[in-house]
Length: 411
Image (cartoon, rainbow, N blue to C red):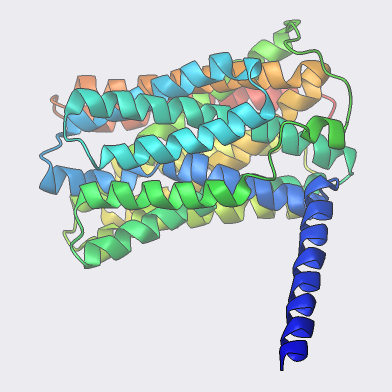
């Protein structure tokens, strides 16, 4: 028996050592396209689905149990988007590991803290910090994934990476739907999201290492290359700024708009999962089925569809119109993000990370303007309607500019 136990123990030790060797080899090996795409998807799901947009489905809960007003919601949203701007401005100064690991950890911490304090000033700071961290993760994951997938001739996998945003949004909406069924308060919901973000961050920890650039070199890049501005780069930045203004009002207020027409959380809460599911599917479809379409023309077409979705609740204020808006806006905004950042990488080349950061900053400024505009006009008759229609016009103007520039842009 003793000999049998010893042999069994030796067998277990040998098995464990084999597992350790396999893990060590996979950790040090160069990531393949599937690994890159999945890692990018999960990182963006946490950064955007929780760090940016978990507030949207929780907003009606905070209105019900914490007395949050529409103006207060606008300030919390704007604070998050201001943080996104600040994060974009300093992201290029961080390494991949600092930005992604640090950003995901910060999102987990401040999200949990939202469920601990009911002080509005503290919540503003927490939402600002979440925005900063979200920008860090989006910029560095985008530059990392786009560059490596391009080098591997697997740009079709870009859609999987950016589907992470929609996956995160849909998952956040489903979590909120579930907790509303068991009457869990908004504070405990924030804490739950914080725990989920932490668990996911730990699962990703080994992927985004400081030495990834050395393990998987693509090209030597200067730490902070200076951007050489052209008219085309300014055009791209202006159109991406227009996206920030155009999509953010429905992206912030869709569940709240649905709540105005129906009180059942199972029904009005569907608006956000629909938004996220449309977003996740759209990037995959665009990357697979529209790979040969000129990026700018596809971006312009998406803008037209988005403008229709933004204007629908203003022109036809019903639950059906709101769900259609969720499909149209959710099904286009991440495709536009993917196309815009892909165009940024193509146009900027070695300046890609810095230019993506600038593009993200312009996008963030547009996002700040949207909620503040709602806050400014919320008390006016038809003020919210005017804000929706105004943002739809901005998106259409960007579509015209993109379509005109498509002929001269080399894809």
